[in-house]
Image (cartoon, rainbow, N blue to C red; front, side, top):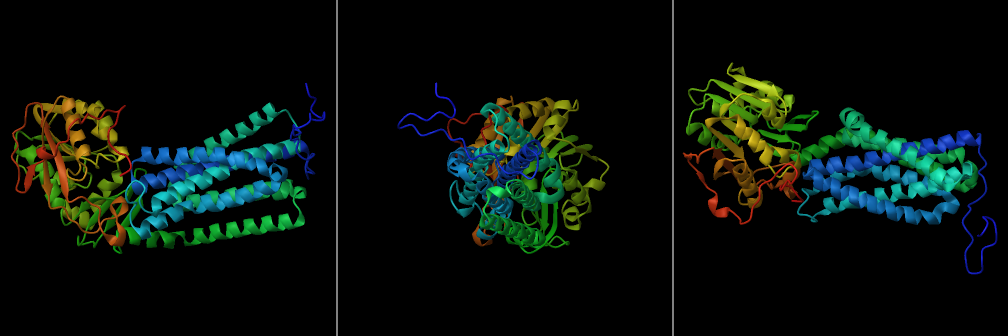
Length: 536
């Protein structure tokens, strides 16, 4: 057995013991505490960068499961590479750690602005790997992962420089600080940074904290490990990084307005982020060129919404009793407007997750004019709740259920297009009741559309799929925004009408069957096996 300091056998390199103990300005116990505090802070900042990339990519692209999988898998892979690469820096651990933290603060802090800028001014994300924005997302994930991975070996070396201890104990202490920091960063992002500062300012603030923590640890505790020139360079690097982050923070409001204008056009009238989503309304207060965007996706266009809502509501209302109606989603009041056109309606329950949408539908002059002030009608009752939870709890039955929900291809909506959800809806239907579902475009995403149909049928209902064309091809924003202000919005809508017995369908003008587009082998979607989404 070779003793720790015995000469190594011929041909075997001696073990790395590192330089001797560091010359610290404080006692070793205090110095060790500062190193662990630095690990805690840097871990918190690193996790915020990861969550910020996932959140921004999910908002801009959609399908949060795919974005989280891509960002986190690329980051974890890069962390391994960064950890291996950092072995070469162990002999200059203090200088290397200071440089890495300054670079990580700059890259991570500016990542949200860079991604949003490329998305806003180049137009859309294209196909799975088309366009600079997707590659930029992967590039940031890779760069941040490399830098985060390089932290741990260098911090391990620094903590051993403070006071040499057995490797197992040092790893346990360092990883404990790292994991607790990750917990704090993971909780701070959704509950503190995102609601109070937003994605852009939150990322810049995190970068600032990261730069200060890394610079203070090296320059304050390990300054004797650096040459005079090294200390000067590290000070200059941190000042430059903090200056860039501070300048970006000062300009972030102007930047966000300019980027929003590039994405949504020049006539943004309402822009607010609720606890549920971002709501943007463009156009004049009198209703000219009205557009409503939820999380970047065009939900209502004043030029064609009537065609959509007539096709959604009237086939279900025309083919049987309709005294009691349940509208799932549709807090804008436009589906309710069409429901109330039918005589004999006694009660309309509107289930909307975001109370801010209903407030705008009541108070915004353009939107309230479009919905014809339906919320003044005493027959209309608003329930602020998740549609899935409401259907699980309700004991009421309805003649008509109108599912006016976002497209099924959006991951956040997947459970509202599941077999379990439609089973709950079937339970809430009267014996001769009808369910109508907005199922997304038929021609451009036929498999998604027919998955909705298969899922409704799997819940024990008979279906009649149909579609209507004539969708406004004008300007669109968010994930539907293309280069030059063009629109990726599909030119049609698809719907599924369902009942316990095969419904008799009375189609309004312009509505046609979608049957000839049915692909083979379509399976229903369930909560544990969702079949929507993916990079689109």
